[in-house]
Length: 312
Image (cartoon, rainbow, N blue to C red; front, side, top):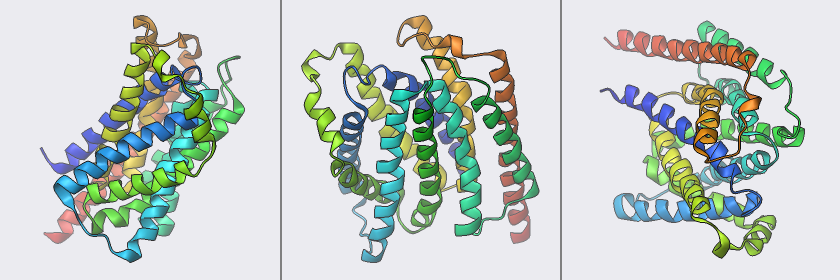
């Protein structure tokens, strides 16, 4: 199996973990742990894990001139991204989160054009437009009273924009250093930024961890290990073998994954029942989003095939 295929499988896998994360994390906030404290715990544990792997297997020296860029990617890809995501998730529905996150590829394609000088093909533009129309239609198709929040939606949009900036800025670092080196420094800098944010300590001090039932500990563990540690590893691996725009396009799968997990988790009793927020109209828009994903990926495939032909 080629590394490109493995990269696509990694992107699908990390988005499955993210889709489950949207619902499971909501079961923790705010009754057991506030969003800012949750992020501090999430990033602190993950940083320790990455530092351990770094010193065991890599120990790659980073040039002083690259520390600033690593700090910037740590700010956008870890601190800002995570804080806005969890604060938004606390306020709005998990389904809305999955929908709004589909705006990431649009920003990625634009930023990749200006920063990385990545070519925007006609097929890629069509794919982005079709996916964007589906995403916008979903976002404006109506809110469910008591489940959605405009402020929460705005926070998630800021999160999506922050992650798009990270995807573009981290690409040159991927070409220069080993993936584990980049992700370790990203989390280390991200943790420092998060620790400097006072509300995180308020949430931590007010949490009564001794009262956490086993189900909450499971959800916390999944968010920290599955939806943070493994997803960042998978994303870093994928970025070594596909472009930022292709990587970002997989965010389009999150709405349908969230919907599937909404039904599954409500059925087995893992989360509250949010099934009423799913409509046939939204499912139709999902098909448009998947069409956009296919066209973007198809464009990237044609580009790789053309470059390979030119080399031969």
